[in-house]
Length: 301
Image (cartoon, rainbow, N blue to C red; front, side, top):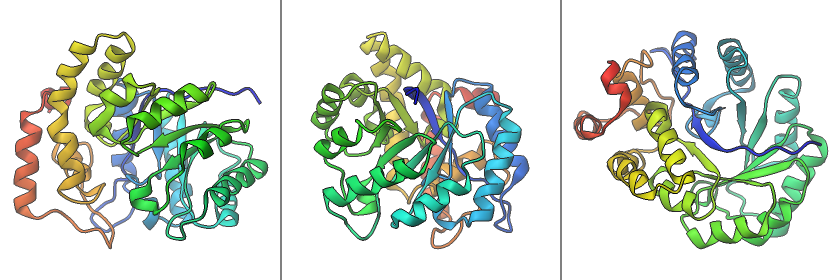
């Protein structure tokens, strides 16, 4: 396998839904055009922000087909896969095997809290059955289990495991993984620590905020890569209040979906249960923070 490295600004794309809770094809097209016409480097669909947990197989397939249609080979497409069962994860991945996908983002088995050996065997077994490259998704807060650096380093030696989306806010961990792996993508999963993560050896981000701030996130990454840390810090400090409120005011993707609707990127902020819409008070707080953030998209609306 010709191993490749994923880097830069990857948007964790929301899944737009109409007022009846069906996938909104026309809003999806609008979102994809926004990212293709701006500075996004890749699209992640059916991740946590894309509400994979409420989409059935047919909906995921339809979402992918529409994404491929609207994208028109402009950006790489990553598909999020979530399952606590190794067998089920393989089944889901094979379901999409025939489509033009760059890689899978595969989360750790959630709820059951397997051992490090079990986690290693989970991803190793998937790699033996699926040819499309994998990105590991480590999110202990949501999954209940953490992939330790020694396990990540061991998994990095498997040919078609090409990187990790890391959400643990321990910068020393990023340095260890970066120093001990070769040609392995280390991607940030927390918008509120992009600056320190990238400086410590990260290669890019899988970003919630990039749904509305793709130019700003891309500029931030470029400045860090160019070691222009002072300029990067100015952008990061402007984005930070919005980064923090997106994860604290309500569960992801409730806040970002509402902002996308407010900015005209999608027609509705419909969310499926057990997630619920924002209260009016929280909308007021969010609106105030968005208006104070220097976003390119605000100048075009």
